Length: 328
Image (tube, rainbow, N blue to C red; front, side, top):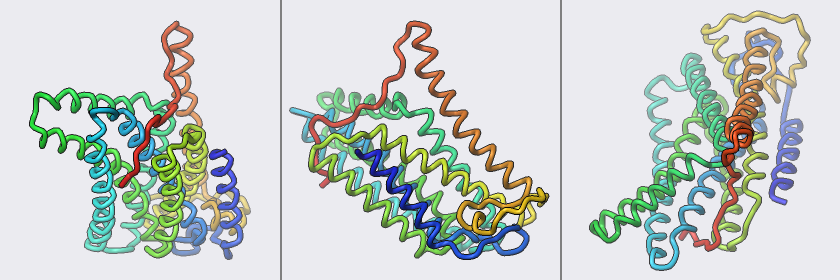
């Protein structure tokens, strides 16, 4: 049901892009950067926040589910660490704005640089999704940290153990928040903070709904399907970001502009950052190949090859928690 809801939201988002698009840029040399429609920027921001929020919920729910019985008191410092991660993410947002302001604000070179950084961050996020779809790495890492802290309860000072659990919750949350901040700075320079924050509000609201269902209502959701659905939406965002990023690099003089002789409608530049140049189209094609290729590579390395060799394949994340706890 959750996967269908996200798919429906994606269709609504695409409809919003269509209704909010005006005009378009057919050639990146014809206009300044930032030609994406307001709806596209809001959609991209919301999808990224929701995707990263789902990851944070998964990790926190798995960690909290393992703290039962006599260890239940350790849930509070984990929760405190998670909220600290949220607070530091907000501080990081304003710090990034200040740093970029000191570097020159919305100049072409800075926009091109932040656009390239946003693409790299999004590729890392997509790689994380594709190669960690079974959560064998990141989940195991947090489980090992939790076990080590629980083993240290009797041999270490209580203060040190509590600090360790606070740090566990903090890193689970701030890792996702830091990626969001890095990615959204590029969109902020192009479209302005108000537009980006509109998407952040939508993505945060959707994340809060999932969090309430998970922690307060103690309900199981189809998390893996939701991750896959949001991953598909992120794939779309990646292709759009690559097209817009390459356009900015062309305008800044970082890349040449080679026409392809195709009549691509201007609205396609506004919605999907599709421009009639070899550089933009080739980069977007490579991004799409990266997304699809790394998925099949991960599936082969983690599931098919181990199964063929008689080993235990990676298992899907069947989270969480049997016993949930409010994030409060």
